[in-house]
Length: 275
Image (cartoon, rainbow, N blue to C red; front, side):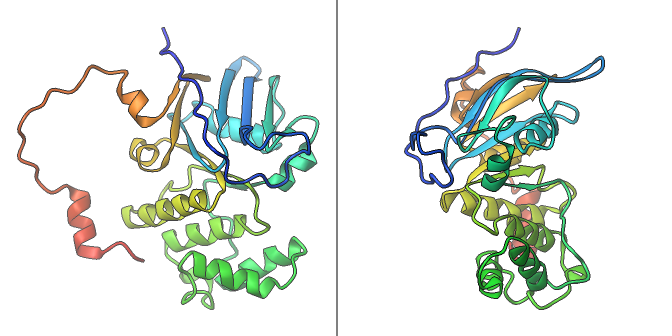
């Protein structure tokens, strides 16, 4: 028996870019209803439903094979659903794919950066491909925003994992997409690099960008998400805030425990939080 899903939260939107003229500004940035996808006898998605409030971070949490990446591919128009509907920034992913693509950016599990180029050159290249005015200024602004100015002139091959990931996210923001999909953005990163990426994601939402984050890391969802949906065997089994999810379990007993430093506390005290 599955756990009951919580109703979506309603908050004041912080971004209404590229909406259809008739779309209310309080409408969710992402709406998914009855999404299904199968590969022959393998049922990956079995009627997925959720909504994402504008300017929030929504975590789709699940183990490997739960269907997280498949859902993101459908929402980003890379894959067609077998059944159900989905709208991103007011546009139907099946019938208005071009409008959806103009509204989003997708960052996959591995950084899509050119190691031969410098960080600044990577950003300028994407800005030119998007036909933006003054691509150099766009690159410099993003390097500053993601604390990469000092490394901007270096080849990406010399970057740490966290720096590459931050550059990858910076590249995905060129053109100011109102919705960004981050598919397991910290896979393979060391603890320090993960924290750097977390900070970058938090700043995206603070700037009004809607973030849909897929992850298999419980602490990542706990640190970042305004709402968390757990995807298991192709179905959303629970959807709510962290506090709502915690209330599904019996209240904790209050006991006195002498707290010792965690390994994370030790690690960060020794190496700091900057790359």
